[in-house]
Amino acid sequence: MVDDETVWELSVHRQDGRAQLMAVGELDLDSAPKLLAEVVQQLEAGATAVIIDLTGLSFIDSSGLGTLVGCWRRAQNAGATLVVANPNEDVAMTLEITGLDQILPIMRDGANA
Image (tube, rainbow, N blue to C red):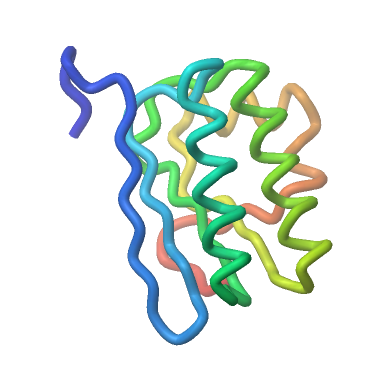
């Protein structure tokens, strides 16, 4: 759960070529480069599937949105899949308003990527 002190946390779980990144806090100008760097690192390490789990994300701004698209493009260029998982209602609405829900694969509630 996000508390007032949590601005950004990112944890990574990797298994059998699949990297799951759990983002907690705010995906904004300060934290977005950290997410992109981790996705690039996972792809360079041979991940064939990347899941960015947004369950704990409380806020996303335009730089965060751009970074999600950048991550998706990097995965495509590497021949990997990338899925955005479990955005909360506010983040999902932002993805919908911007039309990114039509571009980024979104997985909800335990559906398989």
